[in-house]
Image (cartoon, rainbow, N blue to C red):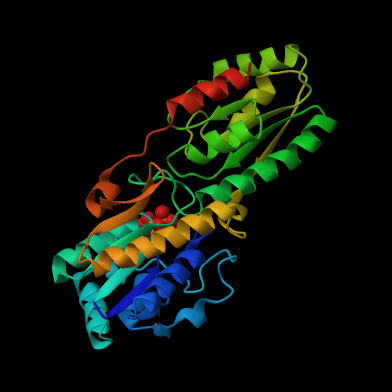
Length: 324
Ligand code: ATP
């Protein structure tokens, strides 16, 4: 390979910039050219490229978001769109592609490879941690720190006013953010899609902790949880069936996707970028790089897309014990 392109696609996450930096600098280290593609697959189709060298990625390791911008591309879902993307890459003499994104972006990359034989390598960038083949996706750790910081602040006001707070966190269909941040933030209950507590048991448990002398409570609700139809209906139910608490809702929202990446995410991004470029240089394609047993490992994109992450049962147990 002589020239590698890198793009960020789908939802952004903290650490994407650190990964771009790593890809660009690894290319420089191995004396091959690198180009950045703006706006994910949209920019690939339009040929919106920028030559990058080791100096073009200075000062970005600590920045959230992505300097290359991210996008969702309808056109890339069509054969014609992918043909245009291929033509743009060939025209620019690119012969390998690193895709930083989630499972949708990897699906696109895999189809693209199957159609044109173009070498592709994935780096998992999403705060949700919902991709198999890595214990941590890029941005997960930073999002956890953001959420824990928010829980700490909410607890200050909760305990000053005898309040019960329902705090909704991101995570799509999985409860990784909720479970980890809930344990770290000392939440009384954690509601995740993987485990349905039921409304009655929730109220029972909150009543128990109230009687045991707690003056405030925090319940973390994963956005994908289905115990209530939504968090506001959950609040109404508890309001009607519990006494003694002033019940409030806080939906953390997109703040969880931003901010300076944590040390962990910066190191992870740097390792993933090196592994992605060097794997392409070794002639490998259709893999995602990931962190498994503290090592950088490759997982076939196909498995990464189709697999479903499992909630850590030991963590669930820890959270149960902590809320007694
Ligand atoms: P996030 O987890 O943050 O949502 P993602 O990578 O899963 O990130 P998607 O919007 O699902 O985000 O996918 C990003 C882009 O990947 C899409 O806009 C589209 O261009 C491309 N893509 C997704 N699925 C396909 C597919 N089946 N065929 C071709 N391209 C696809």
